[in-house]
Length: 429
Image 1 (cartoon, rainbow, N blue to C red):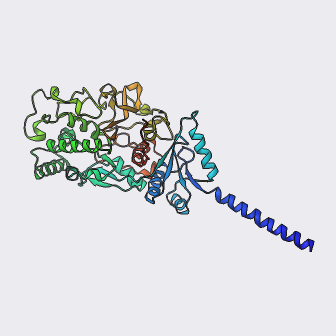
Image 2: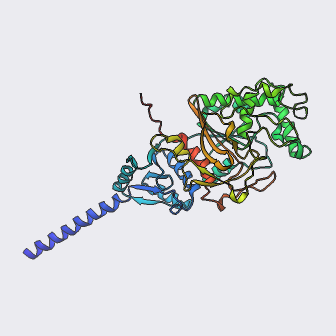
Image 3: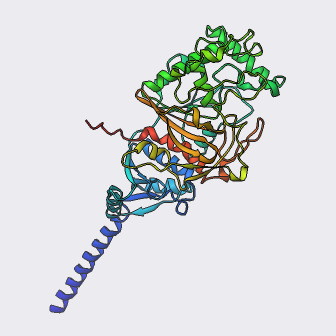
């Protein structure tokens, strides 16, 4: 009898220990940690797509700023694990206790780290013409590769006030001055250039404008209103400087006859209004229609940087006090390979004092990645055309991102995509 009782006690004890072990094992899988450091992640770009997809499932998550390259912490779910496996995104199962330990580590004033909650699915728009152009856009390439959905909008949608439907707007490689990208010297006889010019002129007339430059100014001003109202604006390459130039030239004709059919205003340089711009001041416009350049904002023609030495450095901000630029600079390296474009980088001497420089090549006096606030919204300008194609030319094939799944330059774009998803903290009073 005693033996039977002992055996039963041992049986119940075994069952109890097994139960505790199962509880323990279950606790270890309470979160998915998606590491974003160089060693821990096989596909940084698709990891952003996982983060976006989790938000689409109405699940909040955490962005661990400066922790292992800006990792993501997601409540555990078998479906999330499977999705990571399908997309070849590295992840680690961790327990509640481990997640709490990470949060505690990040909260310490002794470390430059922080936790930001991501809770909203950003609705994304890309400002781009519907017709095919002989170049690709880095943002649409990486959004497609990361499997993040977006809508195309162009002049008609902007002028019809559809932008407030979106949280985030990217300006495709664009010329807002009405000079057709300053491609006249090299491509004025190219079929695509002639077609683009004819389509733009027809569209401007259809929408009630006398000139393409007037339509583009109206679009630029609508985009500015969108930003002031709380939108997130992102632009690359020529959509950065040409945008500011357009705003500063409101009511001034800066286009030569081959662009708009009549002469430019005399002495138009002195009629620019720099108070209307987002980022730049005191720049001098290129008054030569045969020059592939808008102004001296861009340093493409003047820089003396060898390709093998063309790198820019990201600033390290305080993750606890400067949360926004910290989010925008998350990466697995602070040194990013440079790349050219029609607008490669910005002359630092022409950047307004209230603009935050987040990435620069200090030895050359150029800024690459800048940010600012306007009204309730923010804007980010990123120089260059394609982070993984050093000198992308008109007609070149698109970059295959399958070859660059861990691109630091493309990560900066995707940081901006997730930025609107962050929980807005109340201002301290």
